Amino acid sequence: MKTFEQLGVASEIIEAIQELGFEQPMPVQEQVIPLLLAQTRDIIALAQTGTGKTAAFGLPIIQKIDSKQRSPQALILCPTRELCLQLSADLNDFSKYADGVKILPVYGGSSIDSQIRALKRGVQIIVATPGRLIDLLNRKVVSLDLVHTVVLDEADEMLNMGFTESIDDILSRVPKERSMLLFSATMPNEIAKITRKYMDKPAEIVIGRKNEGALNVKHVYYMVTARDKYLALKRIADYYPNIYAIIFCRTRRETQEIADKLIQDGYDADSLHGDLSQSQRDLVMGKFRNKNLQFLVATDVAARGLDVDDITHVINFGLPDDTESYTHRSGRTGRVGKSGTSISIIHIKEKGKIAQIEKAINKQFEKRSLPTGDVICEKQLFNLVDKIEKVKVNEDEIERLLPSIFRKLDWLEKEDIIKRIVSLEFNRLLEYYSAAEEIIEPTERSSRKDRDDRKDRKPFESNGGGSRQAEKGYTRLFINIGKMDGANPANLMGFVNDHVTGKVRIGKIDLLKNFSFFEVPEQEASKVVQTFKGLFIEDRKLIVEVAQESENKSTSNRKTFDKKGKRPKRRSY
Image 1: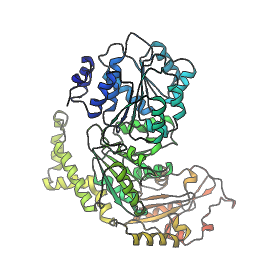
Image 2: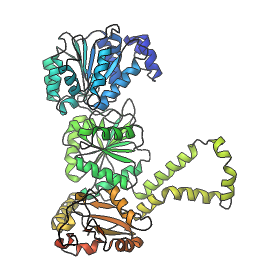
Image 3: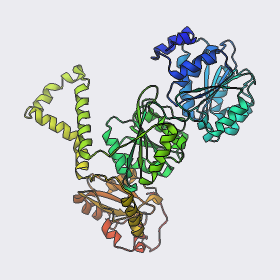
Image 4: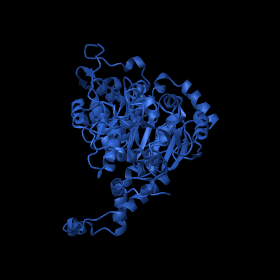
């Protein structure tokens, strides 16, 4: 393997990347860097996200910049704001000792005026999303006349997001005598069209095989019935104590519902989907990057261009429709030489799709059985013991408190203290799994029976109604508040506890359009029901009752009326 010096990288750039921990070039860097430095006109590089491609194009671009010339000389196009910012940050790190090299991220959702001012001061490298760059070009505040290198990063993602016309417009404004480098994880037909139109006999570099999954990613699937998918997700989350994962869902609604359920069940999770504003998106991504979230629940569209290191797992809450989406999902883990796991929770009908993906990415999936409650509790317990063993003790700060602590705990034996520490951390987990039934893998026969059962259910049952069994030790309650009222798990829990004396522990919540169900400990059920009897809020009568009782009433009787007998308008409570 060659060194960066042997590849022709300048000493000031090598000094910067060595400070960042770069030791030896990665395969994509070893192949791309010499070609770009040798002025190779056009290059196609097929490589997964996380293979070191930013340095592959970034180092030679920085080296080729004329810092005395204050106009843009290199243009890097990428699909999203997040990736734009990440690439700019990386290039700034690489150019730490390259005097006079200015890099500007150009993207929507931030002040265009500040970007215009920066352009007027002079920049040599622009990292841009297509939409905002088109806006600046149309305002004639940026010129691409001196650009000698163009990079399309995650080109397949840009095309998936509908940027084809914008890319055509931008490429028509750069000089014909320029180098062009196209990076893509997959090679769909749209990419091939761009290469034919804008590239001349491009050199092609393939890291792995075309459309192949990332090399360091293990592919696993669990097969469950549709009704057990969320329970399976919880078991997977609990089985990996230090998991840091993206959970992919198919729709915005499913994304929000899964995130709400995880939050309700005590996990550090949040959602990322198209209904969020840019400020909300930035807040969620900031929490995830800082590892204040353990789970990011996202749609494919919302997660495009995400560039986050150290993701241990990608979880597919159902498989995507096409292989390319799966390739992009799984490529979010196993980055920069690290290992990762892509887990798919599927039902029996998706088994054939697994075989299709295996063939496309040239990887075998490992079929696993869901871990039992005993195994999960044991793994979590030893993870806690490991943390206790390795925790760093601040001797100076804790020393003055130890005498009082020792006196307080003097009556307890060491074994008692250990048991209490474990119980403090694990009572909730132990209680849950001691009462939880094991999840049985479906067969063709059981799958057909499940479909027949769903056909035979009453309408009330098919909507997640009162016939669903509460967890052991809990009672399932009906409340005539639903999604139409703006209800979500968090504010429903707050609403109940705002009215009931003493804090009530709330278990599973099922939100429906016009009403909902929630579970409370059996000994608290009567108190909760009595609290809401005769209660009106803004002329609206609230009904809270045991779910089995509400099931016995007709659907018409579940409608709520105000004191005058009229149906009240929906309000957010």
